[in-house]
Amino acid sequence: MNRETFINLIKDWRIALVLLLVIGSLVGIYLAPPNPERGLEGNLQFGLDLEGGSWLQMEFQSVVVAYSTDGSVGDLMEDLRTGLETEVIRIDENHLEIRKDVTQTDLEPIFAQSGASIVTYQKGVSAFTADEVKRILNEKVNALGMQDARINLLTPTGSGFPQYVRIELAGVDMATAQEIVGQQGLFEIRVQTTGNETEHVLYGDQITSVGVPQKDYDGRWGVSFTLTDAGAEAFRTAAIESGAVNNPDAHHLVMILDNETVYSAPLSGDLAGQLRSGPIRSLSASTGIGDAGLEDAMTLQIHLRAGALPVKVDIVGSGSVPAALGEQFKVTVLLAGIIALLAVGVIVYYRYREPMIFLPMLATNLAEIVILLGIARFLIQLDLATIAGLIAVVGTGIDQLIIITDEVLHEGRVPSPNLYLKRYGRAFGIIAVAAATVFIAMLPLALMDLSTLRGFAIVTILGVLIGVLVTRPAYGKIIMAILSK
Image 1 (cartoon, rainbow, N blue to C red):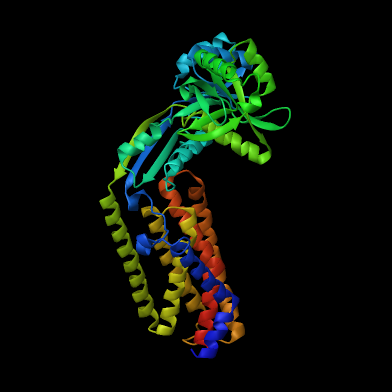
Image 2 (tube, rainbow, N blue to C red):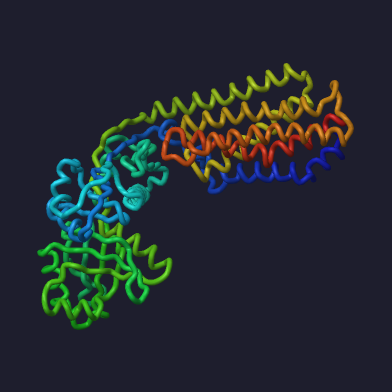
């Protein structure tokens, strides 16, 4: 290939796009930000299999019941709360979430007493509660600097409600993993006295329940919470003695989680007036209006719970991968990838016996892997399943490049431009249909909360899309320019 042909190829938008994506991927892996300590690994995120660490699978101690009743739903929920001494949430018109592991046999007398009956009974939680659990666990591990944690909700086949949550912590031993899940955090409410000085009012163990973020009549978001009798009395005493009842603006209510202020605001006029008359158990903290107010309300809700999950969970499975074994897996995976590339290269060279065909094929395949890693660096962790997906992409990618090459060659030489385009279009049609089949087959796995298979499916889908949209068109242009010479 002469210099002029090479320059014309570089100017083609398809090849320029591939080069731009390769450079961008390398920048993302190694320079954004620079991470020289990790060497060739750069900013790639490795999962439990390759980094070492621990995983825990926990079961929600809660049930979801579909019911029918001719009476008051409120009375039914109150009977359940009183009889079971637990929180009961109404999911929709026909379902209740009972945040306690209770059998259907134990529930039936309470429903019968309230003039209701159980239609269906399932273990698990509502989608809202499951998302809340996931958000709280994310908040915990991120606060400890463990951004590489993977948290997945697991829903058994045939059930519409999540029953398990699985958390994977790369680089964390089993004892630390269990401590993170069980750690409650130290939550404290204080009241401002003089200047910036504050005094203790109560700890988080005096908070009995926390509501979901809601709007008031003025459109302001807020979070309601309930105190114990002792907590309510302590709150009233502190508000009166500090002067917050008489001059709220000068004596803010301050909420602190692990020595960090998470909320500070004065008492409302109505609350100050009520506190003069007696203790108040039900309180509400206002966070503002709009999306910012909602975001602050959701964060404050987590802090009020002091890291406690809304529903009890029991550990039903656990495991760990030692760091040394993770490093061994990493080396083994690297060797497997190199061997796969060499094996593919040998087979392609044996088939064509022509370096000008063999080298562009391998270069295109390698560019595809680099681009895929650059995108995956921001989306998922690399574990054994995702590496398997990468190796599968190498194989299918070479297969599709061979289809293009064989289709456009005519008795060992390139056909005329018009015939070339016709043959290339036919080859690309075959590839597009195969890619669509893979995409459809992998999509359910990518959408399901199956932590092991999900990474494989996502990498496979990304590889198919990058191939069809980026690297195959570029290879078609390259092979045409080379064979015409």
